[in-house]
Image: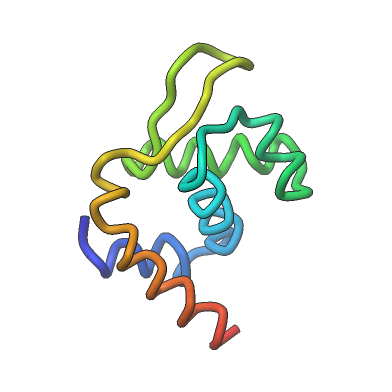
Length: 95
């Protein structure tokens, strides 16, 4: 996964901040969409949208089906997590 892509996903596209918050939560443990919505104080549909974006881009993976699916970081994302944190810190400083 390239750093430029992570920049786009977090800082260069609408909703990047929410995607970053989801990544941060999933780094600590798997969650289902409902629990993520609750933890992040976001609408369930908003969470579902960002989960779909993250899943399509191989940032997260899931186990289970539908409502009960648990989401967690993909191996590829875990391998670049330090880079993600650098981007996140710079993003927060510049917003």
